[in-house]
Length: 114
Image 1 (cartoon, rainbow, N blue to C red):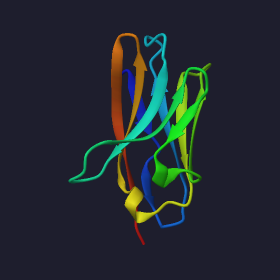
Image 2: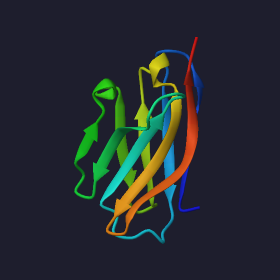
Image 3: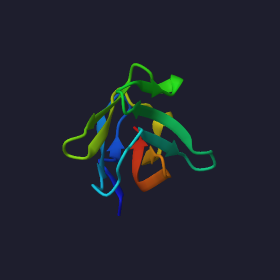
């Protein structure tokens, strides 16, 4: 497995979760590290991305609540999710992109419900 996501779970609205993505050391020259999500019946959407230069972009609905970060030395990146809402419920996927293309990791389920 080249990308392994973890950290999902069930939380109440307003709660927090931290997703982690372990990246295989075989993946080189990463230009972007990203988190996507897909809820049942919906298309997969880009939640957050961080470039090799450290620039970040977020889905409008998560701005100010989610933070993407990376630990290059340990080949990991993260998504800190605060103030979670029921509409954040989805399967979350990590992904990387380099000159060879995009690689998808496993998903981790996030459920926000009271």
